[in-house]
Length: 186
Ligand code: GRF
Image 1 (cartoon, protein in one colour):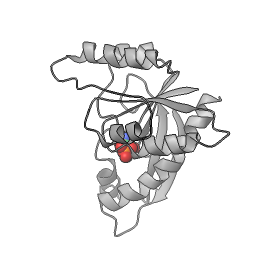
Image 2 (cartoon, rainbow, N blue to C red):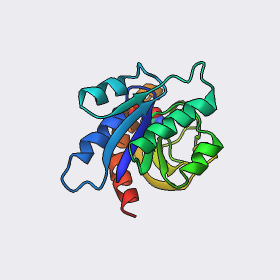
Image 3 (cartoon, helix red, strand yellow):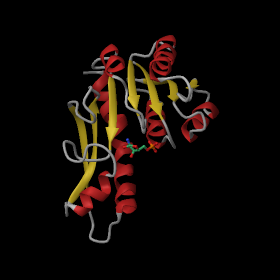
Image 4 (cartoon, rainbow, N blue to C red):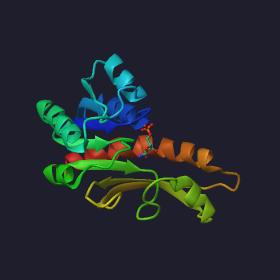
């Protein structure tokens, strides 16, 4: 299965997906890393690894033209499945419909809890004993599609949002490759 990753930032989940894909029995390969932020660290990493990249700022383009360009790049690379990995822009309903059931995302909470941003601070403020991350199908509803896999971590009394984010991020790096592999062989 040919995977295209969309990211906006450092790309640690993309790196985890690429590194896991190098195992002999991995059922997917990352054939394109695309971004709305040309300066994203994840784009530089992918380039250095010899992975095809596509980076385009939507500024001045407008959303339809921007998404059409992303869609074109994904189709030119013969992408089967899109993996969002810290992609900080909402995909339009039309884009989601065009890739129905072929877009997955990783979200740093135990969905359906804490959709959206500031997930770790909200989990701590609520007094939750555990936090975690979820891989889910992307639908028109933000962080609302079917959950494909989750990993749980403890929330410790001394945790601030950054400490919890780091613990969850380590869990993300294990969960995402495993869940994506399961998804593409489902
Ligand atoms: C991760 O916490 C992911 O769950 C969220 O955004 C962050 C991206 O981090 N959607 P990275 O760019 O993969 O390092």
